[in-house]
Length: 185
Ligand code: GRF
Image (cartoon, rainbow, N blue to C red; front, side, top):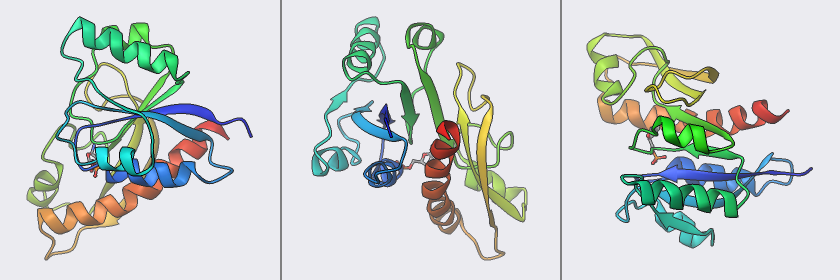
């Protein structure tokens, strides 16, 4: 199988990045993670880049120069898929005009419910019985691109934001992998 080249964009703990790296090492997983871009040098997820010896760049896309550098790195690494994984910046129109590839994201709610931040608090406040995560295509509008896949979990009466977050993260790792497989099958 000829794998597609992917780049993962992170800003934080990078546990989804770790799961994607592990999956990408499977012979039949459709993507190879060629590089990692972090919007901050403080992202602890960068430790996975180091551990798995994947090139990484700190580029926060806050300037034209950063945008050009990001596009250059994607081009150099022949990247056709960008996976956002806890990436805390909004990609602007210019990025989509200039990047000749696909961008996907994982969001910790059943979109279109609870776009943006603070999803777990809102799930608990709304007394939802079920929540989950969504893998979706990304455009320049927040959490609004076409859905690829969703996975659900039950919300228990004693769930807190912390327990819910932990529960959703566990299904995120599977959801991201399955979504990537679905895209290229
Ligand atoms: C995940 O919950 C993801 O849904 C959201 O940000 C979180 C990232 O976690 N977009 P991690 O950095 O992958 O651990």
